[in-house]
Length: 194
Image 1 (cartoon, rainbow, N blue to C red):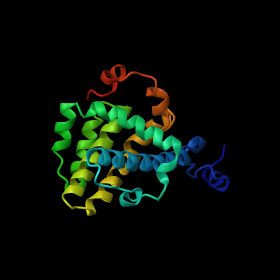
Image 2: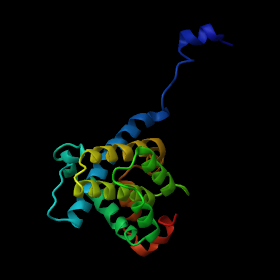
Image 3: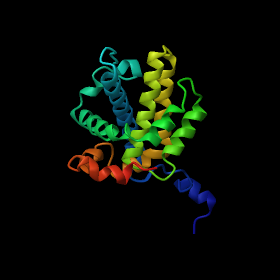
């Protein structure tokens, strides 16, 4: 049996990182999540106020990042789910309690409440919807400095609380596989109630 000196020589005590490359996959999930979030916000703002034009750069992204076909499809799928969220009075009330100039602790408190009973795609969209509402308020109230903060808070929350679940589901594209052929009425009750 090797003692601690022998283990140190062979590297047995050194941290090994994620098994099977999860750390690399999680980085990819976070990158894709950021692009999908920006796409979601841009589409929602455009639908609410067609006069207002946002670009990925306005939200901390890169030009043309939304040109990827799969990203567009994921954003469209999340927007379909979000249409039902707009009719959820409890969620709308929860979101309305958050002020545009809220501190990070308030944002995280509301985000934790959204996920209090577990993680599912409806709740991920609820988090995106919260971000969209805050960003839209910031735009209309000319608090542009808040926008990138909100984006970073969402991404931090996803990294700390949701990315492992997204990885287990197969990544962001799994929303397409899971919900693309399912009528809205079927998944409404199963994923949205908090």
